[in-house]
Image (cartoon, rainbow, N blue to C red):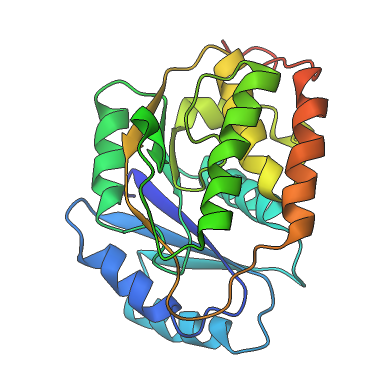
Amino acid sequence: MAEKLVIIPTYNEKENIEKIIRKVFSLEGDFHVLIIEDNSPDGTADIVHRLIKEFPEKLFMEERKGKLGLGTAYIHGFRWALKRDYQYVTEMDADFSHNPDDLIRLYGACKEGADVAIGSRYVDNVIRVVNWPMGRVMMSYFASKYVKIITGLQIADSTAGFVCYRRKVLETLRLDKVRFIGYAFQIEMKLTASKLGFNIVEVPIIFTDRTEGTSKMNKGIFKEAIIGVIKLRFKKIRPVQGVN
């Protein structure tokens, strides 16, 4: 069993899914891929089923009954990974907004001592985003500033969705207590890891907006994050009992 797993949630990603899977498997380092598929009506699952026959020891899929939210997809994937021997688990989008080549850099940061490695768009106060409207860039950038002010979390890109976790982090976090399922999920995971004393490192990446398929972002997701951050400020965080 390989030690590195990449979790990719999907909903209507037929234009991207085969290309992203083949790209990950072309990388050095023997990454495995787990697709969390939320009953896409466009046939995404059919494409993955076909590819599983080609990569039966490296590609896996968990199919759910509907679109249940990004956070629940990743938690489903984390639990799946913890039932197996994966030591490094990475979240990644299906649409190439995250460059698969950067998987090696995130994994490398964890191998060198980080417990959580974040593919950061804003570290060092440099904005590394391509093809987003300026309004959306500013909304995302200042969302992380807002998180820092409200919670004290010292991370430049707290809403980033390209993150590598060491196994011990996922074992220690109380996944059943994760409250949010949308945009705020990413903030909650980082804040929880930080409060539990894990070493978090930001790795600069260039984020490129999707060129194929449809974005899943909407105003409701941002609203959840704004309100959710205030709730997270007062959340009591404890590790899983018996885990340091």
